[in-house]
Image (cartoon, protein in one colour):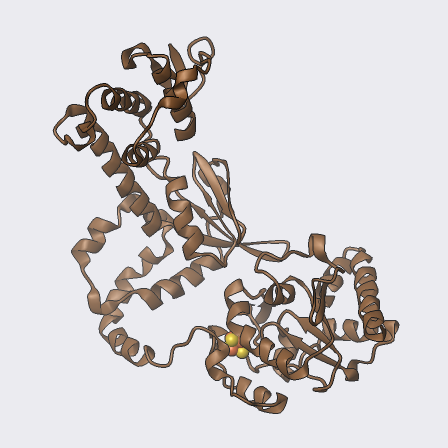
Length: 458
Ligand code: SF4
């Protein structure tokens, strides 16, 4: 009998059926791929198959072995199942049995491969429709992606990312993992801004006080170096090591996770605005000129929340005073809303950008920045207590809803009623789309502002 199993679930279902029909291990040939005319016999389900009880230890081992690249794995697992169920219930503990030796050898190889994937995976930044997406390409020895993907979903829970391997791919959309087909190596981005980011991160985590050269060489196999931008920096970092040890000691004081440590208690809007000038809740303050806090009356009934200040806002220290702000003023005028009566702010109070020559090119804040800055937005909401809030763009809506919010399905709908909150397009997005002759987003924002005005009147 010839059978095909692409993964553990397929093997398990077929093994159950084989066992129920009393088919001996040597009577089955397993494969992972269909070969016309050779493999793929159909199995009919016998009534007895449901009686098979398998221990948790067996399942755990079989799930690991299923990640091995050697197609013999299915044969070995069925042999193990057969023997455990036919007079050798303790076989899994007999470490000298040749079958167990072979399986343990495979298990060790998979665990080592999974460890290497966690240690040497390098994500590169890409941007899609203004959304940051991190992509890593990795070539594991075995089919370990389902083993390591949950680890990355926990570690990088607030980033959208995809891992590509030649066998399989997996994506994290901030809520769930989705598996897809594998891709060739040349489909992955080879060099971009993420390399600088990663080098900065690596520099910050590289601990010169604990250099173990021998171990570095044995733990960083040369085959992974071409996907690891930091390897080029190791010689210079080693040279700088003594100085950096001292810097690390100084630097380890005063670190914080978000803005909450900088927010004074019982402060009014003016006191909050003053305190925000000294915020060090994330690294964005380092390159920007000003903290751009919200503007408008404390008694405002309508609050507009944008993404983050742009270049002009950063230079002047005021929100929505650049081209997007001028468009917003025009739209408010058209709808009959007075800007002076509205409280206008941003989800993130510092300008995030990268230098392109001397030009500062906007980059959307990451989920990490939105989260770090959220205490300021919450403090503004608590002070102003608006009746209606309009989030302009995905980042603002994500600050008030979920990190996975997208405008596509929820624009213009009331997302909550305390205060009444909706999301619409950011004026910058309208400027970009109008550059291509598309005026739909302008019409939709106008309609949403009119809805907000009607809600205030009601
Ligand atoms: S972006 Fe927000 S959290 Fe980060 S430093 Fe500026 S004010 Fe603080």
